[in-house]
Structure formats: structure tokens, C-alpha cells
View 1 (cartoon, helix red, strand yellow):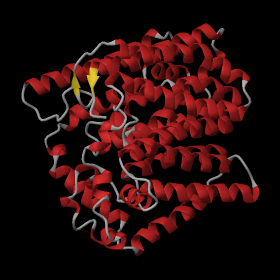
View 2 (cartoon, helix red, strand yellow):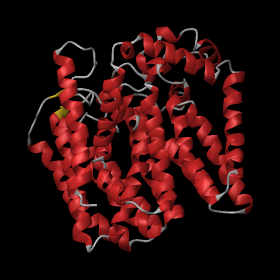
View 3 (cartoon, rainbow, N blue to C red):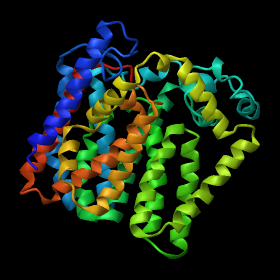
Length: 422
């Protein structure tokens, strides 16, 4: 398929979301976002600070494909982690030196964690007191608050620690998805996808807890995927450990239970469904431990849903965000994602990519993520970008580098055009 077709569809989706959103805002609709379909507000700023991400992107476009092709596999992963961290940092420079830290100063998980004196009482009273917490605490299980409470007792606290967790989580997600792709589709595909995963526009929103969630959930998925590709005790151990991480993921964000679509798709393809049962067994102790402490995941989800519909979601039109959320996600993935999806024919890779797309569709239809999905759906982005492994068949490196340039340019333009709260 000619690239102009998926590119046109990508641009069309975003144009509809922008124009429709502008119309709704002009007519007084309560969208709660000023740069529809993205959170924040439009506000161009062009300065010499933009040269940092541009220069870094040029270096990655030139050097990353070479490194990915020539380095030993473990060094490829290390390079991918380092480059993705530096890409997020380079993009943040457009908003100044404190851009990665500033979003964590607003009321969120840390502020709630600082009020915890007795973790058991906090968990037992969480559902009853949910209305008294800030929007982040109301919208999530209490896992992140407990993590911050625990690390504070180890001397790790404050917004700097928050930012570090987010960056490490984002980089960990990049490594995890490449490991999974290598196991499912082959090493050549994983090496090809690496520069595209690194230069994802989604790195703009790594200044949020969702980047950390992405890392935890990605490794939960990857461990189960690796289990389906191996046998014996090692296979079972990986499935159980992946399930344990999946259980922890569920107590970081309710919506991330949807990442289960990815390992289930792989297990069905490989006919290893027994391992999904083992993973569920691995997750069970986490749910049991929280329940024993007084917090029921299901009661928490019900309470969060009630609070959600009492808040901004009540005024945000479902039909608009059904489209706008997909447009925001498309921006986070970047235009090359659309091109790659249109050309992907490898059924093995589709198990990873398709599982993530199913999760996005379910999340979209649920109506539980109206706006801010460029941040909330961060954990799904790197899985969709694995479709770029299709460029392994590109004639010569110039083609892949051209798509990388388009991807990086998209990220820089978004960062320059939108003043995001993240």
C-alpha cells in the first residue's frame, strides 16, 4: 500500500479531532482540554532550545540503525534504553530544564502518599475516603501511593524521585517490548524496530506516573511471552513471575488489566494457554494480599468509576472522545505507526501489535478514558510501534531513516505547538 494512504488516514483522524474539538469548545462544551485532542493548550514557542531535540534526533537517525545492526544483542538493549531516556530529556528541554520534574509538583500520588501514617488503615479506608483524594488518587488503585510511602522510608522521596521512576519505567518498557519481539518475530525485526521505539513522540509525556506503569506492565507481558516460547521449569517460572508483575500492574492502574490481551494473543497463537492459567495463579497472591489488608480491587474500581462519572467525565461528550482519544493515541504513536500497520503481514508480530490494539479499542469504547490518553495509554504505545519491524525489508537504510526523520519531526512539532501539563 502506498504510504500516502495510511498517512492521509492518520492526518484525517487528527484533523477531525482538532476541528470538531475547536467547534465544541467554541460552543461552550466542557471538554476540559484546550488543545483538543491533547490535554493542555496551543502555544507556539520557538527558541534555540528546540535545537537540542533536533540535534539528538539527527544523531539517532544516523547512528541508531548502525548500532542496532552491529552491536551484540545485550548492548543493543542497553543502547536503546539510554537513547530513549535521552530522547525524553531532549524533548523536555524545549520547556526548560525543570520540565521533567515540574508536572510532579501538582497534586498527585506523592501528595497522597505523604498523608499515609498507617498503610493498613490507608488501604482499609481507601474506598470510603476516595472522594477526599486528588484526581490521580481517585482514578487509580493505591499501589503508587504505597510505593512512594515505602521508598520515602528508604530515603527516596520528592519530585526528583518521581521523575526518575517515570524515566526508568519508560526506558524499561522500550527494552521489554524489544525482548518480546525478538522472541516472537526474530532478532532482525527487533533490531529494526529499535530506533522507532526510541524516537516515539510518546516520550513527550514521560513526565507522568504512566511511564512507570508502562515499564512494569511491559515486563509483565514480556515474561509471559517468553514463557510461551520456552519449555520446562523455566517456562513455568517465567509465567508465574509475569503473573506476579501483572498483579502489581493491576494495583497501579485499573485500565492496565487490558495489557493481558497481548500475552493471551501470543499464547493462543503458540497454543500455550496453560501458561496463562499459571500467570493468573501468579497474580492471585497480590490480589489476596491487598484484600487481606482491607482493599478490594473490584470495590476500588467501582468507587473510581462512580467518582469518574461525577467529575469531568460527566460533561465530556462520549462521541467526541471516542474519536479524539484515538487521534491523541495516533499522535503519541506517530505517523510511521500508521504506515507500518498498513504493511505488516507477519502473523507472529501481529499477536503483539494486535493485542495492544484490542486493548486500545476496549479502553476507548469503555468511556473510562475521556481525554489525556496520550498519557494514560502510554503503556500501549511501544507495543504498537513494533509494527515498524516491517521496515526490515526496506530497500537500503535511507528509507528507514526517512521514516525515522518523520517520526522525530512529529514529536518536535507537537512539543513546540502544545503546552502540555505533562
